[in-house]
Amino acid sequence: MAEPPRPGPTEDADQHRIAAELADIGYCLPGSVTKRQLRCGKPGCACKADPPVLHGPYRQWSRKIGGKTVSRWLSGDQVERYEAWFANAKRARDLLTELEALSLRIAERTEGWDPQPAPTGHRARSGDRGHTDTGPSPQGKRRAPAPRSRRTTGL
Ligand SMILES: [Zn+2]
Image 1: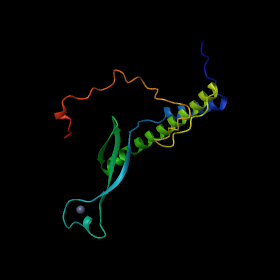
Image 2: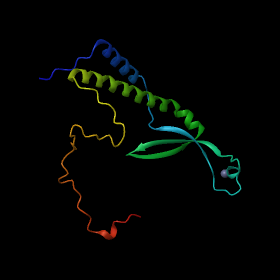
Image 3: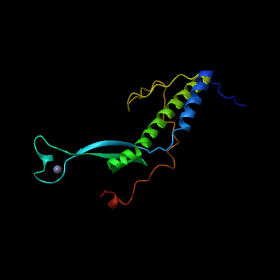
Image 4: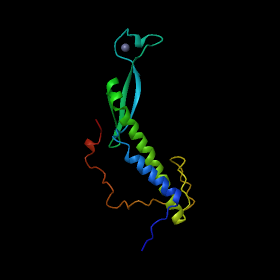
Protein backbone atom coordinates (compact mmCIF):
# COMPACT_ATOMS: atom_id res chain seq x y z
CA MET A 1 0.00 0.00 0.00
CA ALA A 2 1.29 3.43 -0.89
CA GLU A 3 2.30 5.59 2.01
CA PRO A 4 1.11 9.17 2.01
CA PRO A 5 3.65 11.95 1.43
CA ARG A 6 4.97 13.60 4.57
CA PRO A 7 4.94 17.38 4.53
CA GLY A 8 7.04 19.13 7.17
CA PRO A 9 5.54 21.41 9.83
CA THR A 10 6.28 24.63 7.95
CA GLU A 11 4.83 23.11 4.78
CA ASP A 12 1.66 22.17 6.66
CA ALA A 13 1.47 25.72 8.01
CA ASP A 14 1.85 27.14 4.50
CA GLN A 15 -0.83 24.84 3.14
CA HIS A 16 -3.26 25.89 5.89
CA ARG A 17 -2.54 29.57 5.32
CA ILE A 18 -3.13 29.25 1.58
CA ALA A 19 -6.34 27.27 2.12
CA ALA A 20 -7.63 29.85 4.62
CA GLU A 21 -6.91 32.71 2.22
CA LEU A 22 -8.60 30.89 -0.65
CA ALA A 23 -11.66 30.25 1.52
CA ASP A 24 -12.01 34.00 2.15
CA ILE A 25 -11.59 35.20 -1.39
CA GLY A 26 -15.17 35.57 -2.58
CA TYR A 27 -16.29 36.01 -6.17
CA CYS A 28 -13.82 35.82 -9.02
CA LEU A 29 -14.07 37.04 -12.59
CA PRO A 30 -11.67 35.54 -15.13
CA GLY A 31 -9.45 37.44 -17.52
CA SER A 32 -7.99 40.91 -17.32
CA VAL A 33 -9.00 44.48 -17.99
CA THR A 34 -6.77 46.72 -20.08
CA LYS A 35 -7.10 50.33 -21.08
CA ARG A 36 -7.17 51.05 -24.78
CA GLN A 37 -7.03 54.24 -26.79
CA LEU A 38 -8.49 54.09 -30.23
CA ARG A 39 -8.63 55.78 -33.60
CA CYS A 40 -12.00 56.14 -35.27
CA GLY A 41 -12.91 56.12 -38.93
CA LYS A 42 -13.98 59.75 -39.18
CA PRO A 43 -11.89 61.80 -41.61
CA GLY A 44 -10.40 64.93 -40.09
CA CYS A 45 -10.95 63.70 -36.53
CA ALA A 46 -8.46 64.75 -33.87
CA CYS A 47 -7.40 61.11 -33.60
CA LYS A 48 -5.87 61.44 -37.07
CA ALA A 49 -4.08 64.71 -36.34
CA ASP A 50 -0.36 65.10 -35.82
CA PRO A 51 0.17 64.50 -32.95
CA PRO A 52 -2.97 62.35 -32.69
CA VAL A 53 -5.48 62.79 -29.87
CA LEU A 54 -6.80 59.29 -29.45
CA HIS A 55 -10.25 58.39 -28.17
CA GLY A 56 -10.59 56.86 -24.78
CA PRO A 57 -9.19 55.38 -22.75
CA TYR A 58 -11.73 52.59 -22.97
CA ARG A 59 -11.59 49.50 -20.81
CA GLN A 60 -11.50 46.16 -22.52
CA TRP A 61 -12.09 42.96 -20.61
CA SER A 62 -10.41 39.97 -22.27
CA ARG A 63 -10.56 36.36 -21.31
CA LYS A 64 -10.12 32.94 -22.87
CA ILE A 65 -13.01 30.73 -23.79
CA GLY A 66 -12.04 27.36 -25.20
CA GLY A 67 -8.57 28.63 -26.08
CA LYS A 68 -9.86 31.72 -27.86
CA THR A 69 -9.70 35.25 -26.54
CA VAL A 70 -13.01 37.03 -26.25
CA SER A 71 -13.41 40.67 -25.27
CA ARG A 72 -16.05 42.99 -23.95
CA TRP A 73 -16.01 46.75 -23.46
CA LEU A 74 -16.72 47.91 -19.93
CA SER A 75 -18.01 51.25 -18.72
CA GLY A 76 -16.26 53.06 -15.88
CA ASP A 77 -19.07 52.00 -13.56
CA GLN A 78 -18.71 48.39 -14.58
CA VAL A 79 -14.98 48.45 -14.01
CA GLU A 80 -15.59 49.87 -10.57
CA ARG A 81 -18.37 47.40 -9.83
CA TYR A 82 -16.23 44.35 -10.61
CA GLU A 83 -12.77 45.61 -9.73
CA ALA A 84 -12.65 43.52 -6.56
CA TRP A 85 -13.78 40.40 -8.40
CA PHE A 86 -10.97 40.73 -10.93
CA ALA A 87 -8.51 41.27 -8.09
CA ASN A 88 -9.92 38.24 -6.27
CA ALA A 89 -9.38 36.03 -9.29
CA LYS A 90 -5.79 37.16 -9.62
CA ARG A 91 -5.18 36.51 -5.92
CA ALA A 92 -6.75 33.05 -6.27
CA ARG A 93 -4.47 32.25 -9.22
CA ASP A 94 -1.42 33.41 -7.26
CA LEU A 95 -2.42 31.31 -4.26
CA LEU A 96 -3.04 28.25 -6.41
CA THR A 97 0.38 28.70 -8.04
CA GLU A 98 1.91 28.88 -4.59
CA LEU A 99 0.02 25.78 -3.45
CA GLU A 100 1.14 23.84 -6.51
CA ALA A 101 4.77 24.84 -6.02
CA LEU A 102 4.58 23.79 -2.37
CA SER A 103 2.98 20.44 -3.25
CA LEU A 104 5.49 19.84 -6.02
CA ARG A 105 8.37 20.40 -3.60
CA ILE A 106 6.93 17.82 -1.20
CA ALA A 107 6.31 15.29 -3.98
CA GLU A 108 9.83 15.74 -5.37
CA ARG A 109 11.38 15.26 -1.97
CA THR A 110 9.17 12.24 -1.19
CA GLU A 111 10.03 10.54 -4.48
CA GLY A 112 13.63 11.68 -4.68
CA TRP A 113 12.91 13.35 -8.02
CA ASP A 114 15.20 15.96 -9.46
CA PRO A 115 13.38 19.23 -10.01
CA GLN A 116 12.39 19.64 -13.65
CA PRO A 117 13.63 22.92 -15.05
CA ALA A 118 11.24 24.86 -17.21
CA PRO A 119 11.77 24.43 -20.94
CA THR A 120 13.76 27.31 -22.37
CA GLY A 121 12.05 27.41 -25.76
CA HIS A 122 10.08 25.37 -28.24
CA ARG A 123 13.26 23.74 -29.47
CA ALA A 124 14.56 22.52 -26.11
CA ARG A 125 14.89 19.04 -27.52
CA SER A 126 18.52 18.16 -26.98
CA GLY A 127 17.74 14.47 -27.02
CA ASP A 128 20.34 13.33 -24.50
CA ARG A 129 17.96 10.80 -23.02
CA GLY A 130 16.51 9.48 -26.21
CA HIS A 131 13.24 10.93 -25.09
CA THR A 132 10.60 10.20 -27.65
CA ASP A 133 6.99 11.07 -27.92
CA THR A 134 5.25 9.43 -25.00
CA GLY A 135 1.81 10.24 -26.24
CA PRO A 136 -0.65 7.62 -27.37
CA SER A 137 0.15 5.81 -30.56
CA PRO A 138 -1.09 7.67 -33.58
CA GLN A 139 -2.80 4.55 -34.80
CA GLY A 140 -6.49 5.11 -35.10
CA LYS A 141 -5.99 8.82 -34.61
CA ARG A 142 -4.50 9.34 -38.00
CA ARG A 143 -6.71 11.41 -40.15
CA ALA A 144 -7.24 10.07 -43.61
CA PRO A 145 -6.46 12.58 -46.31
CA ALA A 146 -9.70 14.25 -47.24
CA PRO A 147 -10.87 12.90 -50.58
CA ARG A 148 -13.05 15.91 -51.20
CA SER A 149 -10.28 18.18 -52.36
CA ARG A 150 -12.78 20.60 -53.79
CA ARG A 151 -13.81 21.69 -50.33
CA THR A 152 -10.47 21.98 -48.57
CA THR A 153 -9.96 25.66 -49.24
CA GLY A 154 -11.03 27.83 -46.39
CA LEU A 155 -13.36 30.75 -46.65
ZN1 LIG B 1 -11.47 59.93 -34.08
